[in-house]
Length: 338
Image (tube, rainbow, N blue to C red; front, top):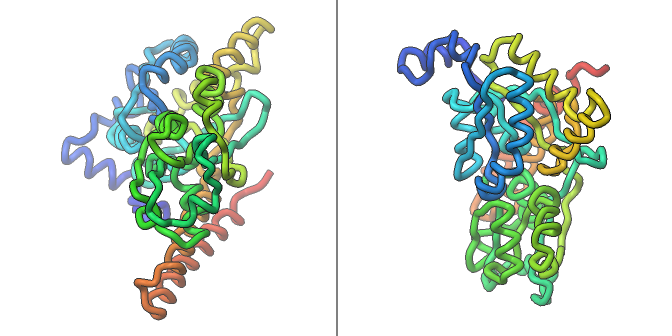
């Protein structure tokens, strides 16, 4: 199911209620507690410590319990929202695409950086003494071990898949001796300790925290590639939450770190800095249009370089993708502008 062919919410709800997969509508609209999903960019213990103060502030603001939800991978948080086990979630843009398509997620806010920036990068790193360059990694001679991100990660998977592998017309599984999917923390540490020869990860989050927390490991890394700027991550909620609760959640995110006494604002900014964020800004699912287009472009470039297709098959598949790209661009162009 894609964003273009999604079933109506009523149909999904009716089917779910018949099968007993979801709780009653009243409970779905008015949960007694908020479960907050956090994608697996590093260990859950580290994330629990970093996100705890923000969730506590949200809990105090809403006047109801707010509990963190962790999963082994990004898909776990997406599926949890799909089945009402998560009410609000921090996603990357790629995982948010899947959450919108599979769980009907609604983006309501976008993160920023403490400096006020609204973006970050995907980076490829090796050990500083490896002697490897980007061109060496792209030789695809199956002699190197490579670390890539979760398939639902933006900077760990979608962006390098688009701007490295699809651009070069290669398949990672055919390039390297081994390809290991892991979170950003694992990929960076694996490169620093020579467990992989090269790896991709986010330039923010764990990358910057590794520099601060484990400078001796960070010093072992050498960056050999950096992507174009990636829009900052979205926050999304379940669509069934009632409008009053959504309004309270939105108010918290839009005022946190902005309103209050000087001491309150300073404390909030310090809490946000723990998760490498600044104050939030409003957003919507329209934030994802560039990433839907990027995903289609990635597929197009991959097909163009795939010699297993005949010319006729390539032409047909590329025409289908071009039609989807045109639909995405038309929808983006039709979006109301202020």
